[in-house]
Image 1 (tube, rainbow, N blue to C red):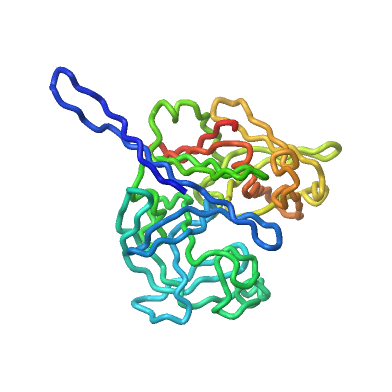
Image 2 (cartoon, helix red, strand yellow):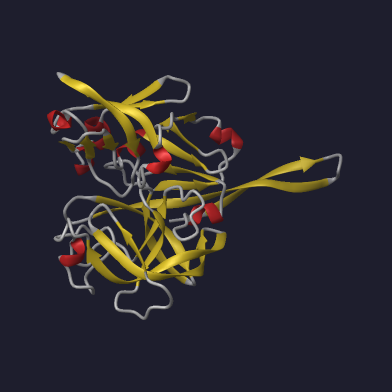
Length: 321
């Protein structure tokens, strides 16, 4: 895996000097296939001099590092995931490097695990602490020792998206199913690259929906013979399958659905989970009855699109792959 930096220079002839106006950092995204067939994604990072592959998660926020059984330093904070796993640990600022870009960011040292009360059989209770890894789906010694959550943090001083400390925007191109090539995280893409992306229409009230819906698009799920369900659609590299809740959602379970992403210009982009998943577990569709409609598309949108996160303009945008 090679990380490189592309510096774009503007030559100011009248002033007689060269000035750097932006820098692009290309970081490889690696896919790891667990023994149960699930795909996980990671980027190489340096955390206080220790180089490691860190799980990349667009559905959560903050950098967490496993130090199970370690000493605590300061107030214990907790952070929960949809798997039911809860991390316990204190937070301290530490130096990280992603490629050639570095910053001091808050990191949670996870010293203890537990399960949410409603999910007592979560992965944290399936393994001893020496065999637990992040993103390992309860499989012994599979997964990662750290996770970087890059959902928007909206100015949160506790759970901070580390990328906001080293860049203004970034694009994510995940490795495609059945491809041997790495994907890429492009930090601070040029304005020319950004112009090729179409902004998605934000769901009403998306800022209050919580993770992973902080970065989501308005859209619908359709299938033959079933009433369309429309609402916020989350993009989440850490989640597998299409999980739909709403009135009549159970009728979509196992269906060959179409996902419609509404764009800010009132047009839409449509993709088929079964087609972009190419037989991977990520294409499984599960519908659950609920009063309000919420759609988690998991990792699938990243198979269909290159995705742009623009912090300065507070926008999510996509480009067909």
